Image (cartoon, rainbow, N blue to C red):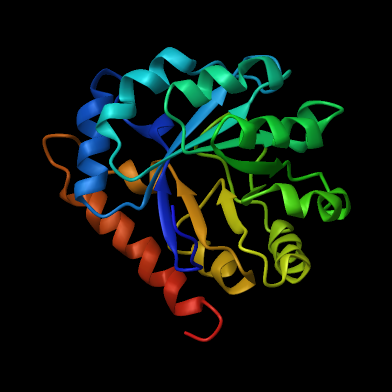
Length: 232
């Protein structure tokens, strides 16, 4: 992974056809996505239960871009090595998931992965300042984590703008997860985000047998975001 601030579209496979993950991943990559986002939920930290390390390992051979694994689990630390060994490129843990997030970020990097730090909508960015030298990505949740298809929380736009100022010239991605559409993507791109996670907005209208809508959806989000980027 080389760092740049170009807009990257990261479809969430939470919205894909679970019976056809391999084909779905190949389809979204063929249709132009940049990263593949994997939402891991434990039914404890968030009110839903999704995937574990065996699933991540099973889909790894199908991912040719970047496998972006978002751990919405608590505790996080006991599972870092398993998700790293399963082939994660980026592992993101929540600031709220445990008392020792600095140690968690160290462990992710020690396992050979890029380290992401996720913030729930109700979490401020004050605590991020002392972690910036430990992270490669900050993920701002623009819905309450746990389910796909939720409405975008507009208060997070200002959070991203402040976060972008705090990051300055550091090579840190700002990722947005939740409610991204061609209408909300420009708000976040203008505020300074560069990685946009989209689930239903990418997968709606398409299938592995008819993947063209995936590409249309990805291009619509990307073009809307790129037009709003500062300096565009």
